Length: 430
Image 1: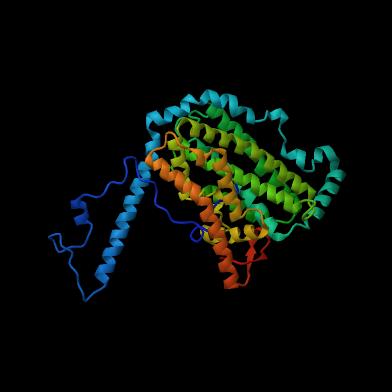
Image 2: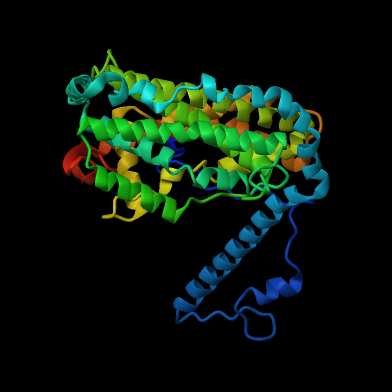
């Protein structure tokens, strides 16, 4: 699964705050009665102004802002729930034969799949002395990996180990869910096959980390348990349109994060060939999985372009928040620790804001978002316009953030990380 490489990292500062698309039929203004009830009046519909006190006016503005927020939440709920209409879900049923022919072949047979024991010293194959020597060599190579890359590796591994959350998410999606746990539909077989392949990722990273001796594994294991316990935020939790847009983005982010880690720890970086091979192997899996979800979403763009482009815009307005958004070291709140980790990942180069923008641009090209013409409603065209303008907005945010950082001349902060025995990481925290 994806490192949240997550996504628009600095949740408050980098990403524009946008209202959701208007529900089908356009904006519905409040009735006169509702408008009258929404303001503080004197009982006859006339707003009473107390010039001697500003607190009343402030309270009124705050109350009205709260009501507007509640209305926005209701509109959001109505928007994504419109995707659960029978006629819209029928599209998913109609393309199941296509999934059988074009998606399931991306899974590898078990007999042809790599296993964690292929990538790490095997005591049964090497014998006691050979296994001991291989572990010493692995530790020697691991000793040269910088601490900031080790922290990013933990985040990658923790995200992969949180696998129980991910198939449960897909099984909340209408039509495609595996209702019995052993359904014979193409959708259900994909979910199980994908989960089985993903299961090896956390296993192999966990075993490497254990053998390397560079990590406090008890603290890492506690982090895994906390993340699975705390769960993850899912927008539009039952809509396949929104769900597949999310996972397509997420899988590409994961592939990039693992691929960058492989490059940084390999022969041209820290010199740990074993870890580079592991991360590269996991990245290759994620690329296949990305291809599957990108194909599925591409098919939905063909079948119902209006629904697909609005679903994509809906998700991008809310950011593609990855599972590590709730990562927690047991010392800080999840949001506070996540912000620290993101600053470390940015410094290390395993996943950056620029990567997020490039993923968006790539998927828009794959799904030909800019070229959509036929079949778009007014809301669909607005969603298309929003998406087409978004990469440039993110680029400008990157530049402004860089300029602010240069002008601020903030000094790095030493952040002790318990995953690596409280060794401190020097990083500029936003």
